[in-house]
Figure 1 (cartoon, rainbow, N blue to C red):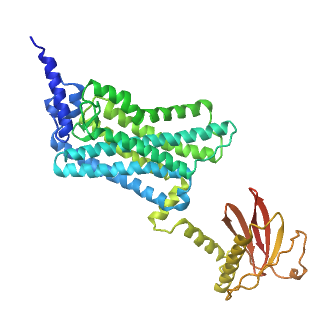
Figure 2 (figure 1 turned 90 degrees about the horizontal axis):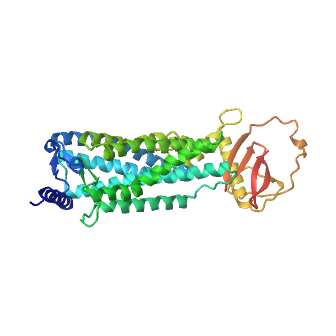
Figure 3 (figure 1 turned 120 degrees about the horizontal axis):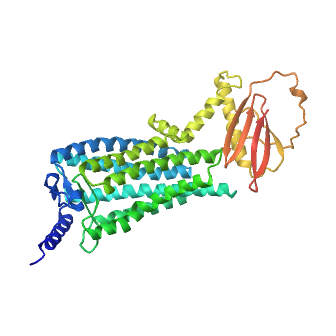
Amino acid sequence: MPDTRGSETEMAISTRLLSLMYDKATPRLRVDELNENSTRYDLAVAAPPDETLVDYWYAWAIITFLSGMFSFVVFLGVVSSRKTRRQPFNLYLIYLMVPDFLFSLLCAMTCLMNAIHGSYWSHWMCNFQQFYVVFGFGANMWLNGVVCFQLHRMLSFSNGRRRYQMPSRRRVTFHSMAVYSWCLFLASWGIYETPKFPFHSGAVTGLGCLPVETDGASTLFFWLVFFPVFAGIPLVYVMWACFDVYRRNLLPPRGKRRLLFIYYARLVGMFVVMWVPSIVLAFVMPISPEYFFAGGTWSHLQGGVSAVVALMKPDILQAVKRFIKCRCDDAEVEKDERFRQQSEDSHGKSLTDAERMRRTSTSMRVSEYDSHYNKSLGDMSFDLEIGPSVGTNKSTELETTPHKEEQTKPEQEGKEDTPSMDTSDGIDGVSRHSRIDQTGQVTIHGSRKNGRRYANEIVIE
């Protein structure tokens, strides 16, 4: 007597493969059709009634849109600040937020289209959803792993009294583009279905399209090949790095490195707290529409929660505030702040327009001199006479004479103290300080840095 059970099993597998190749949007099985003989693969594709699916899709559309928009606003705030995005670890944060808001906003669009349609939109939409879901999941996990690697390396160098060099912006971009390329490659696996390749994607419980197991070969390939290169390696490394920091007591007691590590450890902690439960609920637990909806909801909140944690960094918070208030860029903000400081004297009194113009003009001419002659200054000081500058466009006449600290100025004795002002500016990484008052005499102190000569202090007396 022929083995009918084996032939029925082969026929069911062939039917599943054909439906995955040509029609992923239509549920092949409903929850009320399950029985005691249903396999794990049947549970993965069994969909609830369409009314329940529509409710789930509307809920996901709202949650993902709010989370994605919040992450997108924080992303724009950081990108709009030139000073903030220059820092390498902030640049990592920018690249981390890209897959977050893309994943959430695209999912909001897909869920809204499905809910309006009353069923899953199309076979093409299913392929597209599994593509951006795999890219969003994988890119976030791998980039968090890269950030964790840099933090662990920094703490290890600090503990061994070795100098740690921050990654350059070019290297940060290279790391991020490499992660993006790798995850785009993984996401392309589920687009074209073929029986010869044991990797498939489909509508899990009818709610959303993800990589799905269809038989024993696809199960082995999913857990032994795809999952490690998709999320397993970065997840295990992050957990090991955190344990190693705790075991070796690598966390410094105080200083900027401790604050930096604590901040990014929160981000990595959010990665573990948000992604691990989502993976367990969506892939490990017995698959059901309720568990899958809970896991998907938790994963969609990850982008918004990471954005909230990012705002705990003061420079990022200020950048986002300036963006929301439509403020100008950092350079303009700093210029306005310096001008505001120049509008008040040392006693906090407001200056007249003529006095403000005189001091502003003098300050601009000193900065012009400083940038013009900073290469020729050595470890000595000079005196520079600057005459009245209001209403004239003549170039400044320079007279350089060695400055002595003990030199006195009898002609200034008996005079009343005139209002003065301290300002600071930075050019080429060298700090410059200037004291400006109404007498019009300038003292410039020169120094060396990295084998080059600079003017690092200007005093107008």
